[in-house]
Amino acid sequence: MEGGNLELSRYRDKSYLVNYELTIDIFESFGLIVDDIVPVRSVFMLYTNKGAKILKKIDYSLGELEYINSLMRYVNKNGYKYIAPFMNTVDGNFYLKRPDGIYVVIDLIEGREADFQNPIDLSSVSKALCRFHNSTRGFTCTIEKRNNLNKWIMTFERRASDLVKFREIASLHEIKTGFDNLYLKYVDEYLDEAKESITLLKESPYPKLCTESYNNKNVCHHDLAYHNIIINSENDVYLVDFDYCIADLRIHDIGNLIVKAIKNCKWDIEKAKKIIEDYSSVDALKSEELQVLYDFLIFPQDFYDISRCYYMKTKNWDEYDFLSRLETKAGYYDDRKTFFNNFKQGIAF
Image 1 (cartoon, rainbow, N blue to C red):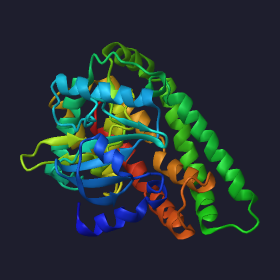
Image 2: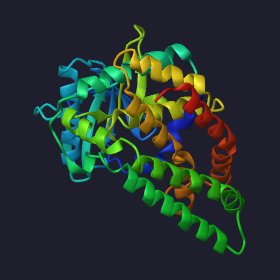
Image 3: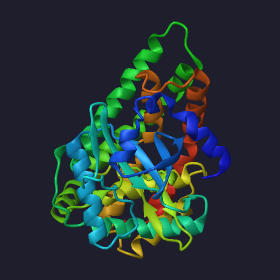
Image 4: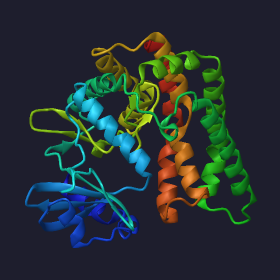
């Protein structure tokens, strides 16, 4: 991580980090002697007698943690070694349960965060993602809360309804904010995209792919942010932070990776094609998957996310931050339209 970004990230999640109750017994439970503690995002980096570690307090159930631990063990055994398993306590557990919550410790992977603007990194990540997906096949541990198969249409319909509700809220404000005005300017266009995505999915092979995925037992990482992908000095690609992993179509991860890589590059179709080609060089995507991937990508997830954060007040950002983010997401509407036209012409399905 670059120095400036590290300094910013150390304090970005203060509101969450205050939930940690850091006492010496946590470290003793894992057999650690800690020399220094540094807050990074929503975790603490520990410098210890056993090397650098990450201390995380989980915000989900023990059942979900056991699901994640089982998945990581399965993936590792099934051929994908580039993950960071949970460290055992001195009692042999992979977590520490305390009155204030559940804590886990993870080895810090030595390396650098993936750079999605670097074509070599992006190629390596795309191929590694496919190998990871292949290693999840046959994972039989199930938990309904982590099952996203056959839920896209229902989810997108709910989110489209949310966009309408947010439009009503913005319209009712007597004194409209800059965010309200910009939202009202673009919401109908993005709502049309949401409806198109839903219609296409209903007419697509989506249910068939879900059945196949259920039979194959595929799992998605579901949080492919650059800081969750670490590349070491030997160019091995590590996937870390499985907090959001779900049973779903592999194109969910592929679609998210494509958006993260191209949304700040004028929605470059060539970059998207390269991700698909590199992924398919390991295990080719079928034409039906490419069709459903197109339908999935049309839904305006970025626009929805920032709108929901603003109108549902799920983030404590100031007005300027919200408006700046919306300006960015609304600003590439035309680029998105061009991208989808090029996708139809340049990616056969």
